[in-house]
Every structure is written in structure tokens, then in C-alpha cells.
Length: 260
Image (cartoon, rainbow, N blue to C red; front, side, top):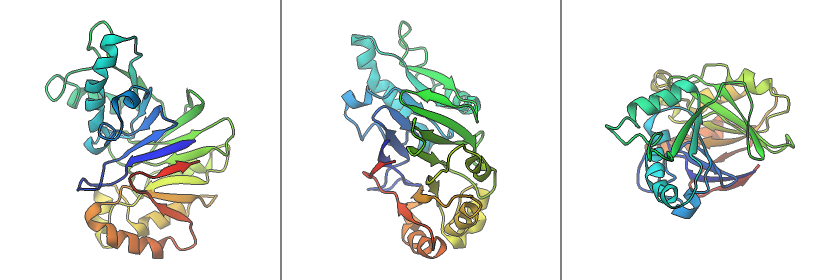
């Protein structure tokens, strides 16, 4: 599974792009920064966008992808770009973004061949996306937020992505109950330890909270750390070295190419 990081920051500053991962060139996981990362011809190769939750830093480039793909819809047959996620998340994107106030509703435009289509996913039910299978699982963050496990025919080809998540909630139990050992985990650490109260209120994690959470997993995975708030990056990186002692981990950066 080829995995490219367009953005993995928990905040927007020069050199720090918002969450967006491209998988096998045609699946996008969250849409915080894709429109400025891919040429238009490659944007047109994306068939599915998996959305973890409706917060703007994970959804804003759905709007610009739709606008860019008008060119392809107008001049050739083009299947709608499928926006996938929990039904309530898709309803919120429709209500608050693609509402003809903030942005045109590209699920009905152009009328003869809409650019976008919403495809709800039910947590726990696998969905085939080409040569990969994806299963959504609930996390405690925004309304109906979810993470995803993506895996191939060979279960050794897999990665689990929590998205933004609080320190509580049952995603560790979900991963523990997968029919294969999950050894690749992309997980967030947004705030430094001294901001634990804010992290809990906003349903994010610190390095200390992250350690407590991943210690509940039956299999110790390699951790890929994402969604670090740029203004706290140095402190968080220092704390990760202490809190994740005994774990193998990699701090994701824009431009990373991973092979799971």
C-alpha cells in the first residue's frame, strides 16, 4: 500500500499543511491540503475521499477538488468523486459547506453529471475500494468522528488511522478485535503534556495520554504521529521521546512516502 503525506499538521502555518493522505494514487484520506499538492490530472485520478470528521482542517479541499474537476466532467465522462464517511459527517458537510452559501452544491452540479456523490459508511462494515478494503471505526472527537483500517488481500498490507481522537473511547478495543494483528497505526498527538486539560476538553491527545491509550493494544504497533500543533512541535517531539520509550515511532512530515 503506497501512502503519501500531503499534510499532517494540526495547525496551518508556513511549511505546515493540514491533514491529507493519498493512498495508492486514488484514495484520499481527509482533504485538508490536496488541491495545492497535486496537478489537476492527478486530482482527476482520485476516486474516493474518506473523511474522518467534518472539521474544516480535514474537509476544506473537498470544495476546491470539486471546482477543479468541473473541467473533466464537462469534456469527458467522469464518475462522481465519492465522498465517504459516517452518514452524519456527510450530512454536516452538505449542510455547512456544500450549501450554496459557503460553496456550490457539487452533488447536484452540473445537473447532467454531478462532480461529487456522498456514500455513507457504517462503522464496522468493510467496504471494498478497488484492491483495498476499508473499515470505519468510531472515535471520540467531533460528531460521529471515525478512524479507518485499510488493508489488502494480504492482511500484512494494512494501516489503521485514528484521525483526531480523544484519550477515551473504544478504538483500542476495535483494533484489538480485528482478524489480524494491526502493526501500523497513524495516531495523533496534538498538544504538549502541560496542556492536558485543553486536550481533553477538545478531545485530542498529548504524548502522555497517547502512551496510556496505545498501552491498551494487544499488539504493540509501529506508531506514526500526526496532527501535531505546529506552535508546540518542539515540546511535543521532546515529550514523545520520553513517553513512547519502548515503542518504534515516526513523526509524520509533509512529503513522506510510506509503504505499508
